[in-house]
Amino acid sequence: MPKEHFPASPRSETELLGEITGLLREFTANPNHPALMGKPEGNPVQIRPAFPSASEMTARWTAGIDAAGDNYVRGVQAPRANFKTAALANKDAWKAGINKAVAEDAFAKGMQNVNEDEAIAIAVAVGSQGWANGAKARTGKHTRIMGKVAPLMAAAVETVRRKPAVTDADREARAVEMIRAGRAVGKALRGG
Image (cartoon, rainbow, N blue to C red; front, top):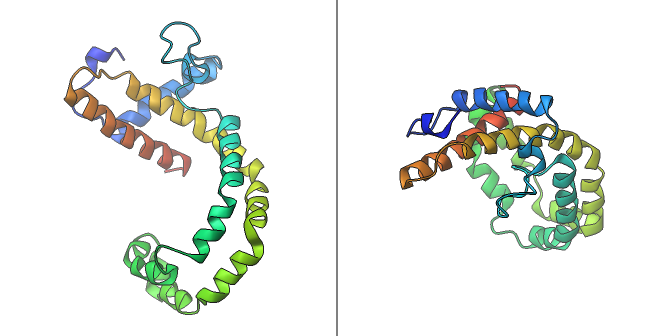
């Protein structure tokens, strides 16, 4: 859609998902689409793809695991808040999504049995390398999921990039559309 035909207000998730689906068809027809491959010629600022590939996302994820292991262990031992208390404070938000568990009050009953000291001792015993190994054991799963996420997010980013960004209202609308497009991608990934 040419930029001059975009509405001034942000598009709905349904509208964005329709355009994202159209771009996915383009990506299937052309695996070397500029939104997937980047633009090595032309404007030197926009040379990367619209969103990293699945393998790049997995490489970043595993690098983050390696870098964050010690922070994880320190964070578990010195949390910003008591996780049991914080979890119980979010009880109402949790109830909204899980009606059966709410009816049985399973969340509160389960959290009452939590032993904070035991949980911390387990995390320390597992240690940073155990945490990293456990996370990295899911590398194949992460790559598979990113294989679904990357093209959808590339289509979402490209969809929003095609809208003009001349005025403050244009840029604000694009920001809202990026939030909505990301939400639409999440729903599409969950099958909703």
